Length: 575
Image 1 (tube, rainbow, N blue to C red):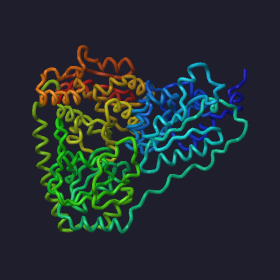
Image 2 (image 1 turned 120 degrees about the vertical axis):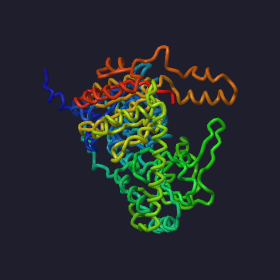
Image 3 (image 1 turned 30 degrees about the vertical axis):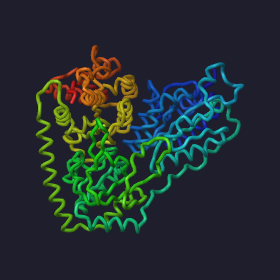
């Protein structure tokens, strides 16, 4: 019998891909197994000594979402490996959300063999597509399928550079199954590691115009969405707001601004009603914060006065797709500056001076902020002891237990009550709000993975409907030793859509009491605690009385600190 060393003396084409994964420092590879990349799988396990670490997932969406969450929390990419055409199609929604959320995910796929004589009967035919990347081309930054192993290093390098260039996003590299499995009969140099281009700096003349407009403004308001993708942006925005004396509305796709700062007016739309200049910083979702929506009629009314000047600083239409409409409605800005806000905000701050006018604004908005928060506190106390538990009460109970720790919130915010109650005082506290249903558990796993080993308590306020899409994701955390605390936001319903049916019933005069049909998660109610325990978690619940939450959280946190994931199933009101 040959020794393992002698077995590995012979090299294979897929080893070159592993060399590149090592050279570019991709630490993990989330995957669901598939024969189309069996050559690469063997190379990672044996030639690469399981580096990047392979993370087995029960669904391809989860694999991509873990990489998505990891990138949001760390700013660094990891790999997601998808089996052939079918695995790619399974992962489509997760890839789209990573694209819309501007997260770098290095997606590796496989296909074929493209050599028809090497295809197994039936299975290799129905799992193979002609130009497989077309399936995701509308929502990836780049895709490529090299035809020979010598084309792999250059295309890999280009893919990495495209992925990491702002605005970032996922890329898709497709490797022919037969190409992977070939013996390597010659040396294939991987070349120099591709350098990511430097940041996009603002036009100095345009930035001077921005500073002039802001200096003359009486009531400027700042709108920010992706500024906090870099911790430098978070800190820089604080300095800009304080220099200008302007309130900040944080859209929340990243944590852009400290939640308890006196100039934080997130969730307080009225701040736009008397604005004379709106400074939009790296923001796509400008319309939702600055308008009022009548959901039943879809009527949108601007809160911003006519005559208000709009300034946009960001990547503009660099990330636009002709297919996906994530670019949203066009803002007709008076001045548009193409630039990375990480560079533009400090440069703009240097052009501005803190004046008596800005100090007066800070005092005014600080007083207004206290009134806004007092209103929230009064609202939070309504039905304080109710069962099921109200969202403000649950946010409060969790906050009381985690605030003594170095904590991180993964995605969901309990309909913004966590953002109101908790003190988001550091840029890493929250990588950004959740996206659509069936995204949060996977993204949360990625966030927890990024913080693993840092001594931080990672908390996921997890909706019940979202978890039911991929309950198998719980096993991933236990299998790969990812400690995290899940507190279920369990209203036993897909209530966001239930609300829409209530609106339709009221509009059309149909019975409101029938709005729950096709929306409720009862008869039977999922037992999330039992489900979690079956997959290696510590779990308690269901808990529907607020007074019992604190003790359960204390027990769960001790388990998480010992390295075991823990879930507390809390039953909440349907808003």
